[in-house]
Amino acid sequence: MKGIFIAFEGCEGAGKSTQMRLLSDWLTAHGVKHVLTREPGGGQISEAIRKIILDGKNSEMTDECEALLYAAARAQHLADTVIPALDRGETVLCDRYVFSSFAYQGYGRGLSVKFLKEINAYAAGHMPDVTLFLDIPPARAFERKHGADPDDRMEQAGEAFHRRVYEGYCKLLKRYPDKIVSVDCSGTKFETSARIVETLLERGFFGRENG
Ligand code: TYD
Image 1 (cartoon, rainbow, N blue to C red):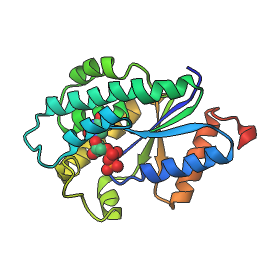
Image 2 (image 1 turned 120 degrees about the horizontal axis):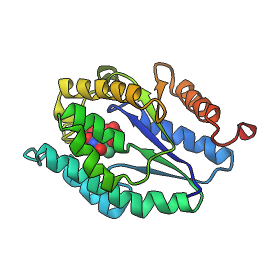
Image 3 (image 1 turned 135 degrees about the vertical axis):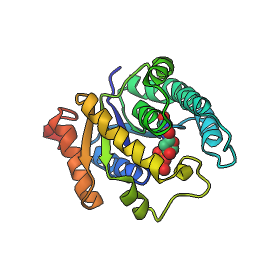
């Protein structure tokens, strides 16, 4: 696989899609072929799974079912979108990946790490070259996006849930310092974007001569 796989992580409203767009602009300006995609989703089948997971009407979904559906969407998305792009030598910018499952279904819902690692051993056969954690506490992030979406089952999970998710991400950062990099998001979106580019160049991606 020749391409670079970059995953974006963070709480709701952390600005992942904005930062992915800004990085995409930078990559285009520097002639780097890339695709933007998201989890759960990205392709037709995974987008259908996404609808089931997030549908506010599915309030009786068990935590195990939720975790398995995220893993199922991941397996499909990896096969139909991520791996083919990496094989073509393109960079993949992915909105969320397996650390979302550890943070949300593990720390948020309370499912065991063993269960999540087991199901994701099938689903996440290829890991990102780097995962960028956009660090902003959930209370501030929800403030930025003017509250939780009433139709989104995950956003409606409550303040305590989202606090556990954020604390979970902080623990994951300590546990996987070689895989996840924290990005301070307290400044403007352009400051954060510049930090992301700098972080990637420092780690040897895209060659500084291109920057
Ligand atoms: P996303 O589209 O990134 O939502 P947002 O843009 O609002 O942050 O992700 C959809 C939701 O799915 C989000 O609430 C996080 C959740 N999620 C999990 O709980 N586990 C997972 O493995 C993934 C990929 C997402």
